[in-house]
Structure formats: structure tokens, C-alpha cells
Length: 113
Image 1 (spheres, rainbow, N blue to C red):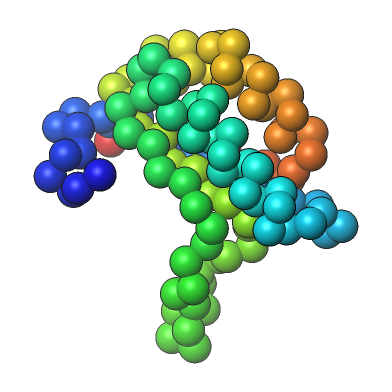
Image 2 (image 1 turned 90 degrees about the horizontal axis):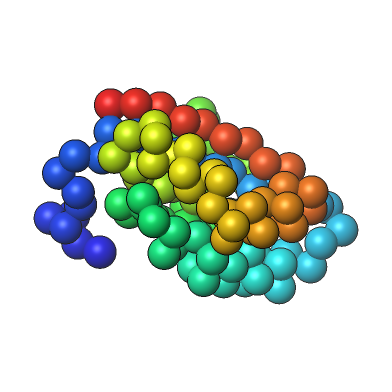
């Protein structure tokens, strides 16, 4: 998606950081997690935009505050809180969450614009 294609009004932001278990086969588990994000979550009604991927290698001595202690990050934009609430109750999200919330350490950050 190009920057110019971003929605003009998507003031509700949902960020999820997934940390796989220490004993997990990281590459395989990350690939499976990303595949399920793309197939289960990307098309849930109310999702304006969705991005996911591994942490970017941007930490330097001058940027020590960069937190890359996760394996997959997910960012989802919604028009409003009601759209997020509907997304969370959608059967595809519930299926996804039942699997990955128990398997991973999950941190969620929601904020409004």
C-alpha cells in the first residue's frame, strides 16, 4: 500500500506485539503467524488498513530506546472504537486470538487520534 492510499480518517489505532515462546521454531512459527494474520484478519469488516512484520533493525547506540523484543508486530487502523469492538468479536479474530494469545506473549496498545 502506498502512503497516499492511507485512509483519510482512521483515528483508532490497534497495535499488537507478539513474542513467541523461547522454545518455538521462530522462523516457522513467525511464518505461520503472519500467514494467519493475512488470511484471517486482513479482510475482517471494519479494518481500514493492516500491516504486520518482524521488528525492523533500527536500534543503534543513539537509539537505545528502540524496543525490538517481539517477533511479529501488527498494526490495524479503524474508523472508530465501534469498528475495533466489532473486529474483536468477529469469528475470524476470535479463532486467531484463541490460538495465538495462548501460544505467545501478547502486548496490545490502542490509541485514538
